[in-house]
Amino acid sequence: MTSKVYFSDFRIRRDENLVEKFDRLYDLAGLGSMDLKDKFVAIKMHFGELGNFAYLRHNYVAGLVSYIKAHGGRPFLTDCNTLYTGSRTNALDHLETAMLNGFTFSTVGAQVIIADGLKGDDEVEIPVEGAVYSKTALIGRALADADVIISLTHFKSHESTGFGGSLKNLGMGGGSRAGKKDMHSSCKPRMGTGKCIVCHKCQKACAHDATDFSSGKCQIDYLKCVGCGRCVEACPTGAIIPGTDEKFAVLDYKIAEYTKAILNGKPSFHISFAMDISPFCDCYASNDAPIVPDVGVFASFDPIALDTACADAVNKMPINPNSLLAERNSSEHDHFCALHQETDWHAQILHGIELGLGSDKYELVEMR
Image (cartoon, rainbow, N blue to C red):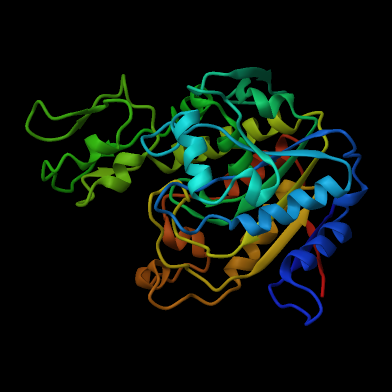
């Protein structure tokens, strides 16, 4: 089957602003036709790590909240706590981070609820029909309790999954801390041929005390390591390297399975902003220059088609000079594979299709 994906660029007419234009996009894509009246509507998004500036502006979120309210829904913004060290590992820090990054009731018109609770253990175990790796998924309770799921995604590149789209936002982002550990467990890094300079940056980045310096150099304690990969990015010399291609594929498969657990049996709608397309996740406390120019906003009932359309559109864009992608100087035609050669984003798409999440065949409907 061919799914419809609706698209708007960032150009405007003189008689409307971008929020008003995106309201028209939501109408065209069918969001207004959903039964939202008196429903608890979870807007699953990423509030950004403190120090990161690539996450979505609260103005766009406020526009979506107003749209849902106008159709009778009861929206709330939500995400689950993180597995790694940072400003979002528990609900108190997470809520403060959301507030400091502009997501408050006064700015967006909706409450922020951390889906897996104070310490990340308020979860619901959901069976995943057809799953190969995660037969059950541990999902944040607020997401599991919601009547309607709307994913609002900042589409960008990602060092472990190729890109971060709607599946990554929902599957990884919707897992509780234990769920995230389950997804990362097959993706543990290893010591490479690079030189460990004993700077202890990996130790500071690790939330699980999995780095061991008793030998005088860093070693990884695999009984403690959960495979989140923060040490890989923290290491300045490349002494710690990611797991194998196969293991990254397993991470993609599990993300698709967790996405199915969240969406199964519930009405859902998916929106992706392909802008400020940074080479790494918004989970970092910084962001690099965008790899390509801003593309636009995509919306669909099909998360597989949406992610595929976003990836195709980004791959058609010219490379921004003075970006990490330009620095790679790769002959690879796929921007995401050029940035992170050990990844293959198609894995999550193909497994999502097998799970019945949608289709990678799409018709792009462009709105003016």
